[in-house]
Amino acid sequence: MIEKIGFMQGRLSPMIGGKIQSFPWNSWQDEIVAAKSIGISIMEWTLDQERLYENPFMTRAGQKEIASLCNKNRFSIPSLTGDCFMQAPFWKVDDAVLCEKLKADFNAIIRSCSNIGVEIVVVPLVDGGSLDDIQQENILVDFLSQQQNRLNELGVRIIFESDFAPMELNRFISCLDADVFGINYDIGNSASLGFDPLKEFKFFGDRVINVHVKDRVRNGTTVPLGHGSADFSTVYSLLKSHGYDGNYILQTARANNDQHLEVLLEYKKFVQNGFR
Image (cartoon, rainbow, N blue to C red; front, side):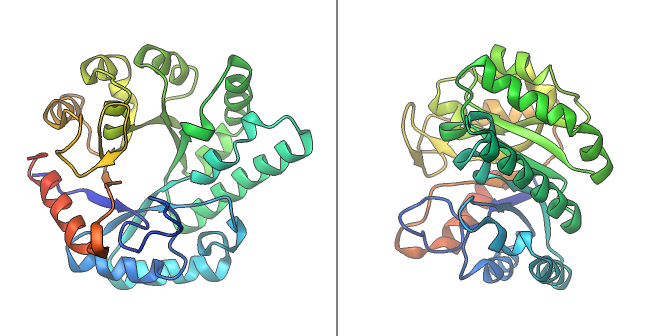
């Protein structure tokens, strides 16, 4: 039975502006209590570029409140998804001043992770953050390589969610130290892109540090678990064979009629029972 199941922040709140994922400004505290009520004690924080420095994750007062809520509820936030990096990727900016500002944002986020005890930062190299050419890749890799010692000191690992084909992702991640950098495996995104899990895990299975659980149709949108193109049984078998012992983060389809807690509980049971 799988025990290390968490959820993506916002999945227990109403959608904001029709977005499937965004920071729940009015209910982030309530989500922690709600998750505990259904036996989930792990959450992945999400950061947007908009109002970045107002997010409680980035303020001293907010960090104290987060720590207090986690201690009170025996709750943990081991990872963060940086949607902000996808919304404003420094590796795709031509303006030198803006590029340096976005790099400074990156470093400020890492400091906040260290303050709170978040050990994993997901950098999405998809959609707006997708690497379009080798120049963008070099900018990203050079900057992160320069940060490696600092990341080590702060106890933070950077992992990538990517739309690269398996062989290309292996080439990319092989350029970076395995002690600091790894892969976030998104089950639904890989299914939507038509990737073969056997080939994926052959090329980078030993670099997977975090798993996002979702289902998507081929070349399409997110759907309830078990209703899309994801081959959950094969993925689960491959994760086990590679000795994966990390978290399974529910980044699942949103509930209808605001039945977020009930639907997340169903998804939790689906994963808990070995994706059945």
